[in-house]
Amino acid sequence: MSSTSGKSLNFVFDKCKALLADKIEREKAKGIVNRSIKIMVCGVPNVGKSSFINKLSGKKSAITGDRPGVTKGKQWIRLKNNFELLDTPGILWPKFDDDAVGLRLAFTGAVKDEIMDIEELACHLLVFLRDNYPSSLTERYKMTDFDNLEGYEMLELLGKKRGFVVSGGEIDTERAAHILLDEFRGAKLGSITLEKPEQEKR
Image (cartoon, rainbow, N blue to C red; front, side):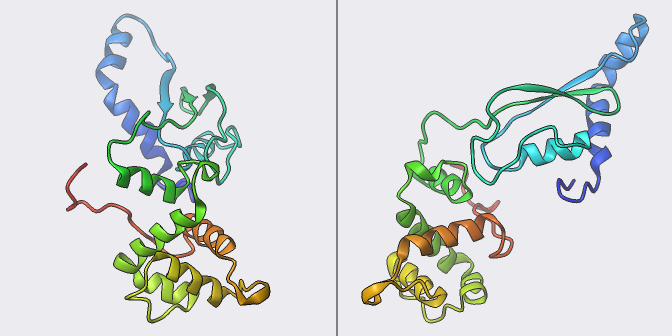
């Protein structure tokens, strides 16, 4: 289903009822009817849980934002079709056994930028895009001839293409890093997958 358009919205309710069909029938046999169905939404930060909830509820029940940590606490939200939904703050593993997993989550904004070196993060993302989605860099930033460039060199090239030149002719690479990450997270670089099914699960 789509949290933007609401396409196939009723699928969520229908699927929940199908999963609980046996329990609902047992309760009916005991004379218990129309008991509300309680569901919960949980997941990593900044993936659209609140947007999903707002579309299900038909109103702005959950605060949304383009950064992790917007939802501060648990709250129950009454939905249509006799459903109640528990909204929870985003959760992450207490420790990443694989640095690559943490890096991919940081790309998406699931890890707060304030605790990251934003330029280093942008350099890693540029290398990933160079190796997997080079056309996104060419189309969005008019970058060419970057096949043999490393992360920081690519960040400088991006900054130059965007005109982020400061006094002395230096490139404002921090500004370029913020722009890259913001536009990646806003899907302005196109549809990009950070993991593919054929990759070994970590």
